[in-house]
Length: 347
Image 1: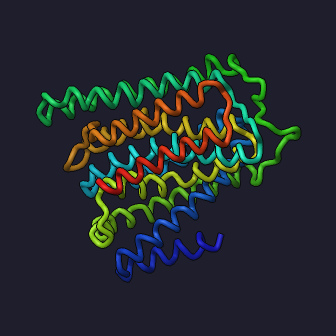
Image 2: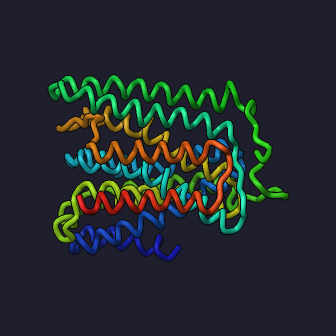
Image 3: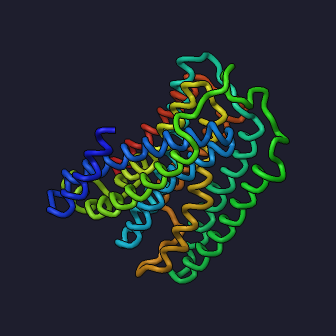
């Protein structure tokens, strides 16, 4: 609470008085994380009111709203490499860091946790499509294309991804809602949990926090180049690790809270649902938005980014397909994230 009420005014004052970029970078990151915690608490209240599936979707959506806002300002500044790297970081962060910490922390408290196996299998197919098919195809085909054709291919794939994502939501929330129920679809509590805030209060806090995040994010983007030079970081590392962790702080916090409460249906829905939303909605939307700026962003990732994302998807699919989790599976996911983090840092 203190960081939120201090961080926002200090961010504004520091921005107007042109304090050093390295100091402001830290202040902006901490402020966004503090604001994200409010977004997390608000969406948790709405999740309790709306149920696990809608709750998981809300958490993923508002968590990704931060990343979307940061990415739009980065695109406007011509930092397409940082945006693509941050999308990679979100996929890795959600599948390996968020899911890994959720499985690990929940597994310390409960020896065996379960979640909806039908949802897990449904999401596995979408993950394979979104990352392995839709991200690898542009990389392979663009090798023999000029820049114009690459952008056309990226736009075409983006439109298909958005359409399929909307169809997936329609399938899950309308035509097949309640068809595939797990034994513990309630989540893991004997009593009904009361939301922290009322529906209206949660929506108002969510809206205010999102507006504040938008302001701070624009300022954050302008510090990237100076910070990269000062610390010797590459744009790739800033995007994959720093922007992804800061941008996804809200759902990171929410997923851990739900896992600790043994509500694994929501925790897994946040981790995997957020990844799907990044790959099938946020990334394509950013490709389309980039057409409005000076430099259009193709949906073409570097080879290390593609290999890292494909590996994390395959690992997550294998681990989650049984509908059960434990602390060791969580540790395995975290180990994979650290290995990839070291690789991106040294690139």
